[in-house]
Length: 330
Image 1 (cartoon, rainbow, N blue to C red):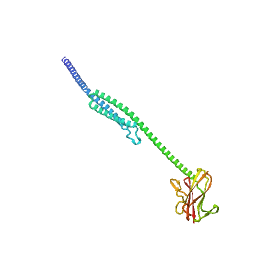
Image 2: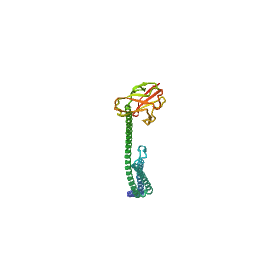
Image 3: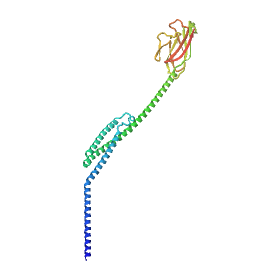
Image 4: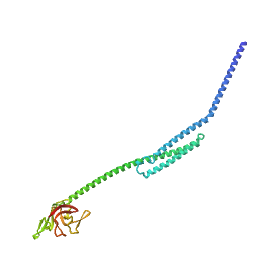
């Protein structure tokens, strides 16, 4: 009986010990769980602040990148990059360049505001940051839209200007070709006119000259002796010429004596180009583009007889020399 009673007490003691261990274990778990909850509750705000700060930084960096893109776009506006290909800038070109400069100032202002936002609105003031960010984002979006429009128009103007430059060069080339063609036509016309004028010259044929003296009944007798010659006789033929202008022609005869002086009356001159030339005798002829035989005479008005030697005889008509011959008197 005593053994049974002892064993029963031992069993009761083990149960109580087990219950005590369980209670102590439960208290420990409860303490640990309570500590964990307290830790979690205490660290929650800090984690939220860290997460909020990282989100703000990410949004700020994204806005910064977008600002840099706008800055890059503005650098290509204003025509500074390729001025040699554009020629003179139009008023619209200048206006776009000025507008781009204004947008650059606006961009700098937004970037400055963004720096102030990051400095004053930290993670401890998320609402203030969000408000400032929204304002900057709206300004950035508006500026980006304006710059895109300006860049598009700038590109269009450059394209138009290049086309105008191309057309201008083409026109200049066409004008140069036209000028050369006109110059060639003028040159050909001058050559043709020269040929016509040359063809229109009444170059005489059958030109001959001799000295004569008057014998019985006024008959002319040729002589080569200077002391017997009373006057010089020059015979020639105006040819048929359909190119020459028909009408009254003035034929001038110039006789140059052996002393190199023109035999003249001292006051008779005719126009040859820009010069006035003395002549010996003149004859008026009605020319009808047909062959015509003529005779002209020269007297020595200032001497009783002709000097011996070589006499040069030249004929002129319509401002051109039409014949030349020589005569020797003994």
